[in-house]
Length: 355
Image (cartoon, rainbow, N blue to C red; front, side):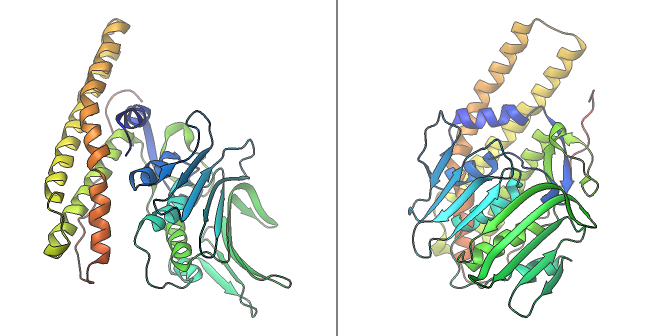
């Protein structure tokens, strides 16, 4: 599980930052790699690399899948690589600036229960979201985003036959092709259909993603929303996860419910409430320090006190957060039924004070 030091470092990175929701997500920029690595680690994946080296290597609990994150000076190289070590031995490669939410479409599919069967429907999924789909007579497909910046293509090679899907995004599309290359994805032709479909779903998801203020590349096709406190948004997102898990738990068959789930959800809610209080209290301390500065030592002491109290609540999420995944997995395995999902909480008001 993620330990308190890792969660505290993540919290410190974002607690006081301002950022904006941006869309479409395929133009959002790379985001934080921990969006992927923390989720896999919480799902039981293990790290098989030197913690003091920038390369990260992780393996699934059944050793069937491996993820490698290897930064390079060249952002168009494959920083992220996922491959299967059994069966068809398929692979996927994402360049350095690929948005983590799109990569997470793949990795999330690997931690969810595998469907009995799922055929490749990448073109259909994208077309449903307004992407323009054309097909040739040989089995090739080309699907272009509504703003013409991103293309998903599956070619047919005279020598190799049907190739895997490739996705390429650019800042703009000019009359002669891409202008301002952003990122690229290469997917093996042997990749399972449910994995390909999950990536396509993440690629065309219209929901905005959050990016810190100075990490937004404001291209001509990127929509940037109102600036908000990122810490507030993180708390809101976690509350939505808890609300969804609570509703799923109410609709699961009694035999599928673990006796400790209800208690763990209550503890997660209590910890999140207290973390939110600490966040607001610290924001007030920072604002008071700005108006009437105190000695640096006193301010550092106040931060240390906040961190010390927060560690216990962060540890609750590190040790019991897997309950959300367990409930979600049980809901997917349960007989099909309509389960209402709580509507997302409204976006918080813009924080007061100096920007």
